[in-house]
Image (tube, rainbow, N blue to C red; front, side, top):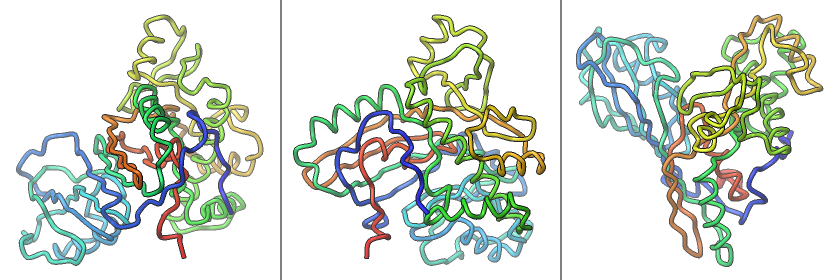
Length: 333
C-alpha cells in the first residue's frame, strides 16, 4: 500500500536525494525544555544512541536498574537508524551505578536527578542535522529560494510516513480495528493514531490546495506556536493576522474523536469515525503549519546539509518533502 501524494505547499521537489546513507547523516538532539531538580527518586540519563531503538534501550536501562520496564520514562521515540541524543528517567530505588552500564550503540553522556518520571511529550523541541545526498548541480538558486521561503513561512504540518508504518501497513491495522478485531493495547493505540493522523493529513491537504493552510479563518481554532495552547478565533482581525504572518500563531484542524461532527472529517472514512466514537477517543486539535526553527543549510554539488529545530510531535520528513524526493538508503537493494 502507498500513501497519497498529499499536496505540497512550495512546489515540486527540486532533486532526488538519498537519506540515511550512514547513521550520522540523520542526527537528532532532544531539548528537554525544563530544569531538573537535582534530587528525587528518578535518575535522569542523557543518552547518545546509534542504530538503537528507544523502546529496546529503555528495557536495557530497566534491566540494569532492576526495575520494571514500565517504570522507565522517555519523552519521545527517536529513530533507530540515526544518531540521537535523548533523556530517559529511571527510578533509583536500587541505586544503580550508571558508570558500569555497557550496551552496544549507547553511551550515557550525563546523569542527573529529578522528582518525577519523564512523561511522553514532555520535551520542548528536537534539533536535526540531516544530510541529503544527491546531484544538486543546477538546482542551487532554486534550492536557496525554496529554503528561504520555508524559513519565512514554514511548511504544512503533515504526519510523516513513519506514522503509517512500513509500506503504510498501519492503515490495514486501523481498518481491522475499526471492523471489530481485538488488538493488544499497543497495537490498538497505533490503529487509533493511524486513523486520526491519516484523516488530519487529508484535511490539511485540502487546506494546502486552497492556500488557506497558513491563514487564520474566522470561526476556527488557533494554536500558539510551540505549545499545546489553543483558542477560538471569533474575528481574524489585523492583530491576529499579523501574529499569524510572523508564525506566532497558526490555524489548526481537528484530530477527530468522539463527539466531533461527522462533517468535520474528510469523506470516505465512516468505519474509522464509528470506531473512534465507540472507543470514546477524545478529540483534539493540531496546528496546520510547522515553523522550522533556525533553518540553516550547506550546499555543494553532491549534498545538501540541513540543520533546524522542530517542536515535539512534528516530523522532519514534512520539511524534507517540500524540498526533495527522499529515498531511504535502507530501501535500496
